[in-house]
Picture 1: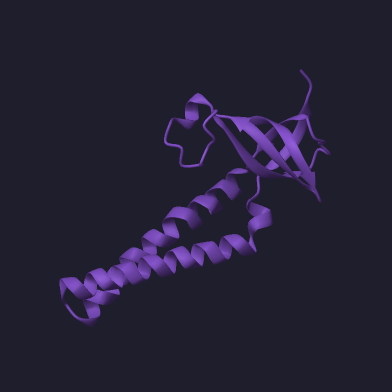
Picture 2: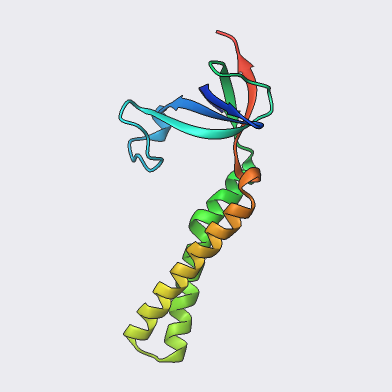
Length: 131
């Protein structure tokens, strides 16, 4: 569970600023700011207001769905596209072209599904913490 401070409240959703933890590492894949913070949107199930310190959680099932959309769909698209390219014309060029097309299709499918399920993929601000 992460902890952060609410910076914006809008229609049942809050923007929360969090600090990087040791578990996060230094890859900066989340486009973290230079000061070691990141902003994320979360459903406001605890009624938090601007300035409140909140606990944020992402259910395991939602984490698995997000991971599948981000990594597995493009991977399966890449493999299936390569197989289809090879089956159509047993050459390296056709295999590479099929792999690229499959990867693109997998990414596109992941983005479309994520947009349709964006509300379900959001983490939740579940508790207002008191210092």
